[in-house]
Image (cartoon, rainbow, N blue to C red; front, side, top):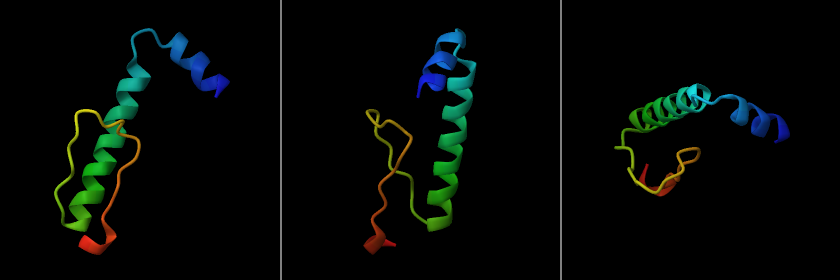
Length: 57
C-alpha cells in the first residue's frame, strides 16, 4: 500500500489513475457484454468491483 500511495503522490497529472480507470471500465464492459446483460451504472460506484446477480444469468 505504501508503494501505491507514493506513486499516487508522484503522479501529479493523474495519468496512471486515469489509465487504470479506463482499463477497469473496459474490462467491466467486456464482462457484461459476454454475460449478455447491460452494465449497471451508478454515479457513486467506485468502479473497482461489480456485483453480478448469478441467478439472473
